[in-house]
Image 1 (cartoon, rainbow, N blue to C red):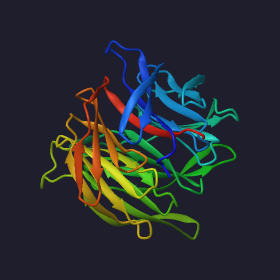
Image 2 (image 1 turned 90 degrees about the vertical axis):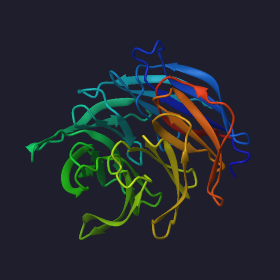
Image 3 (image 1 turned 30 degrees about the vertical axis):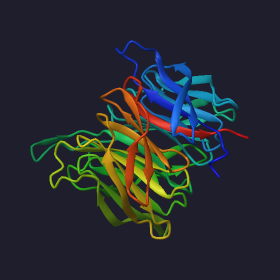
Length: 354
């Protein structure tokens, strides 16, 4: 159980023009108190997003020059492995297939999906494929420009999903694990002006959760294969906003608790954290908590591994804020002072080996 386990947390942040060169911070996690204590800083430029390999041995980060790989040391420290170009503008998201054979990045600025081979030691190899999403030009007086915001790979490694926030859709690609090539298969159409921002697959891969930035909702899809073709059937849509009209409110985070029993989201504008209970059988969500984070623009929010505490990364107010949560009572109470950090983007908890 999480009680005796030891964890560190990695937090990525922007650096440019902020008087710092440390884009990743490593914290010791105090599970009992629900607090973080800084233990190490890593020099990296504008770490907009980080992810840990399925093997738990390597951490990958987006950086200005492309992507960087770090070996995770036994104490949770990071050792630089290598960096690689993604042959495009700066990325905003990075993910791996379930065998850690490939790294896939999302390009917000240039609407590009880039696939890179991973070496046995976790270091990053050559680009195996790259795709630019195409825009609609000026449709009905609006200029739709591709912004690839998030990448997920289906549990069977057959499909790559690329959420396009600018085009209000999710492109589904067939994924060839031998060659590292992707080819267009189908499209999940989201509502107009909904802006799909983040996605998560359930642990068993049967359900897909999509956080829609502008519409301020989470859409839930059931994923099935019919005659060898992927189908995503929408089974639920829940609102992250208490406003009838969500203009000025933007939905950002989408993170599972370590045990996958809860899904955490957040809103800018209202500046709330929202926690849902997940029914693993049906995939459906039930709202448990929707309360303020005491900060501006919670770009990411996450439950501690014991599900008793929550941390919010407040991008615009340069802080981490901490809360004690009670799912049964639906409460979230401030837990100690905020921690200052410039423009935090994303947090990942990592369990240390005993």
